[in-house]
Length: 234
Image (tube, rainbow, N blue to C red; front, side, top):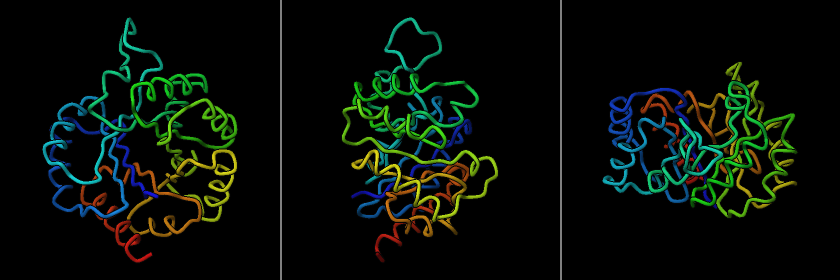
């Protein structure tokens, strides 16, 4: 099975800053067998960064969109349909806690976005958290996608910037796998190079989902390289 490192830039970086980030990252990043690195820039960066990444032809490095419209192409002002980003990204983040908290997205919105993403050939990274985990996981039953990922990200860890204890992460991963046994599960919440290996060792996890530590190219490259080292020594 693959191990994933997913970096979510959230609402950060202009197009020029994004290109500078990738220029620095590719000098430091060391691709490793079995490791898939996924970076999610903002929408304004996707087109130029996608062209840049394709020209580099880096092994095991993909892009993700941070969100997608729950509607198809059409009269939906301000929305970005899944068909519009097909070819630019391989993955799309869906149902992030910040989307639920700040934009009042519902479980039905998440389900619609998943359907649109899968229909466009994109791989959803579906975010879940307590206390809504069961309803969020059950919604995946109707999604026909072999490469869907589940990102467990406790809201408290993101707000306090204190990672959830590994034993609690393991409990959550076990619960998720009881409901969705065939889906890779990644953990996100205040991870950095010095603690990432502790979470890679958690049984039932297939990688990590990184926010703040993905904004600095050197920090993110170090984190990815530590994951690669962990895999080679396991």
